[in-house]
Image 1: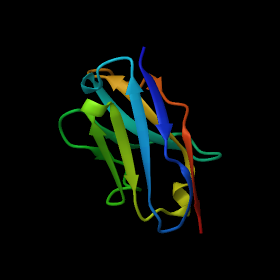
Image 2: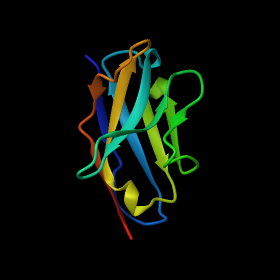
Image 3: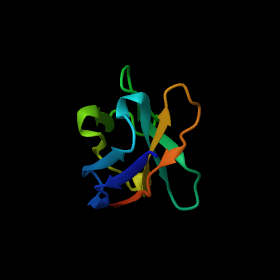
Image 4: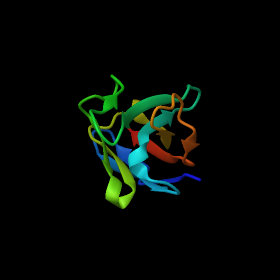
Length: 118
């Protein structure tokens, strides 16, 4: 069974940076597309960034040029580097995985809180 564990959230001032990490276990990371989603209070969860083991990454328009998703398959870890953070980036950030060819993300971490103060 795939298990995901996020870390790296916290409180940061606007304009600051954070790096989130997602530890992957229970299977072979290269077989999965990995993603970061976020959910702010009162809002629906949204896809922030995604990356398969090969190919280019996807980014939501709101985070393009500020966030970078990367993966180190040999270390079973996925990262989300966030720069120039804004108060609107405040949310719980979730790591998610889907097996190649699947439509939906069906493995989720417990989430990590990111709070950006103005």
